[in-house]
Image 1 (cartoon, rainbow, N blue to C red):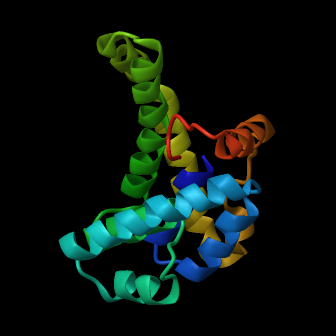
Image 2: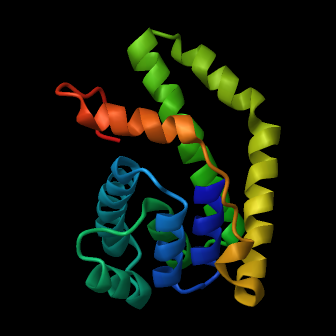
Length: 172
């Protein structure tokens, strides 16, 4: 929900640097902030090559060590001519497809079963994307406080524990 709101707000044209601050505030775990910026840096490089824009160039110049993936995703969507709702959908799908792929690799879950689970989540994913896009519409008048700010403390703790392990399973 948080990533979808940030992506939708970036796609709606809200100041990406203010969204960066909002992403930091909504991501208390340093390991998760670092992973989000690393993924954002990679996405920004790809987006600039695919959909060149002054906004992407400006973000790259002001955040040379990376911007949050969700903010970059929203700017990339904007550069590609997509809507805030499209950006929210992309963020929502990315946030569930990654863990589904991990379960296939780590637990040897049948890929078709994982895909079926994602398909059954479609209505919930629609709802989350729509809520995120609605929140993004309010950002221009209400500021970043309009964006979702839900938390998952156990994920933050697990991310920090994973980052400290000598042998990590995934980079993010």
